[in-house]
Amino acid sequence: GDVLKLDVTAELDGFIADAARTVLLPGASGRARRLRDCAQRAFHRALEVARPGTPVRELGRVVEREVESDGFAVVRELTGHGVGRRVHEPPEVPNFFSALTQGVLEEGMVIALEPIIAEKPSRIVEERDGWTIRTQNRSLAAHYEHTIVIREQGPLILTDGQPHPQLP
Image (cartoon, rainbow, N blue to C red; front, side):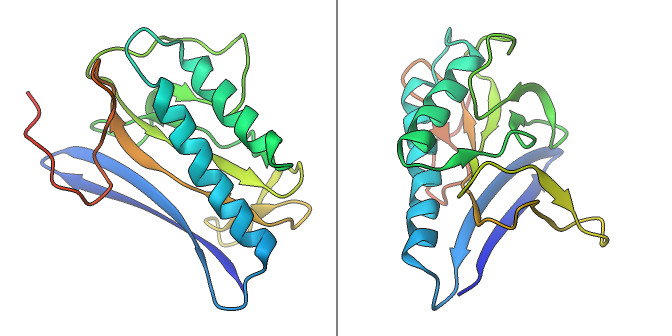
């Protein structure tokens, strides 16, 4: 019945890609399935508006709206981000709306879009191992992430396992 988040980065020729999935082990609850599915839906809703000229804060607005409409909460301390030669580059891509979020999506920009959500509002806690994180109130959490390229004709998902044409 455990709910696991697998978050993987890969490097090729000095460039980084980042992706994550929530995996449900046998016996996971229906609520855990709904939470996992909500994170994935929130990603796809944000993907629909991820075009050049869109303010970065709009991605957060779309994610937050989808998550809250399902009765769940965004984990605010963890965000999406730019990806390139390092795994975390500008811009920061929050999963909630804030008028203070800076930046506009540009053609060719590469970002990790990653809704991270929980059953109930909660802060995160890092375990003593220095790696494992969990919700402070121990509510279930889910994460869905892909590295995408912003393009006028629609974002290109680089980490979905599908063959893609060469990028210019």
